[in-house]
Picture (cartoon, rainbow, N blue to C red):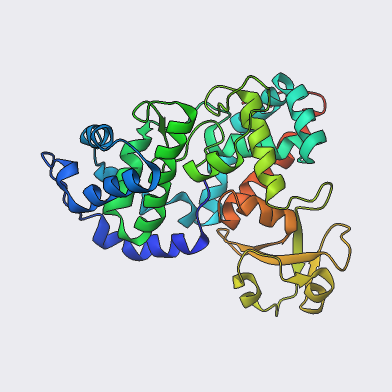
Length: 337
């Protein structure tokens, strides 16, 4: 799922207030003025049928545990706790198996969009363990809860609720039938509703976009998403960095978008350990370990991965998992448990 970096800060700041929110089980949602206004807006803006929408929201359920979960995102963990969630033997083995099972589709995605197979596989591995963990929340419940009872991001999630209703109408899907993450992400690729409408593709030509059951569509849609967001074929993603003792740590707090050339980074005492041209743009990344910081430089393709989830930790987990899968997949030897 793709959420802005400022989201993490807002979440942490709001933990005390939102974990104390009170929910009434007997509340009729359509009697709430904010939900009634939303329904009327959907009718006037998009010609939805009001009785049908009213009936739909009468069946929606507010989920107070969603507020509690979203207030403590995994991306707020330090790197030494975050990394072991995703860089595991099971995910590496699963990625190798997934590559072997879908190698023709992955090759076609690379030829079409220039996205390396291991990157697509790693995103699927981090997001849903290759489709095994797609989430058990009804999307209508998740988005309704966050749109109307989570003020820090209410505007964003209300927009996603609007997009969700449009998406299910376009795709001819029952909006009560879809389950996914607590934040409204769906399918093997965990696209939010707006991303589904904009970037999901029918990669096998069967006439529909199915990110829940169709590996071709999931692979093609991830590749399409990364391509649209600026992936540069066969360009570097990230590099371990060696830094001088007096490095300015503020350089790692300048956002996710690369803003210094490798040449400039060297002037600041930051050296990458692989061959990258001096004019390549990068950003210093400081990862918290149990001892001293671990430094990396992320390049433009690293930034593209953060468009999928606006977190350096997420992008680094995808990158490192992809490298492990690539390194171990050559001979297709599974890793022992």
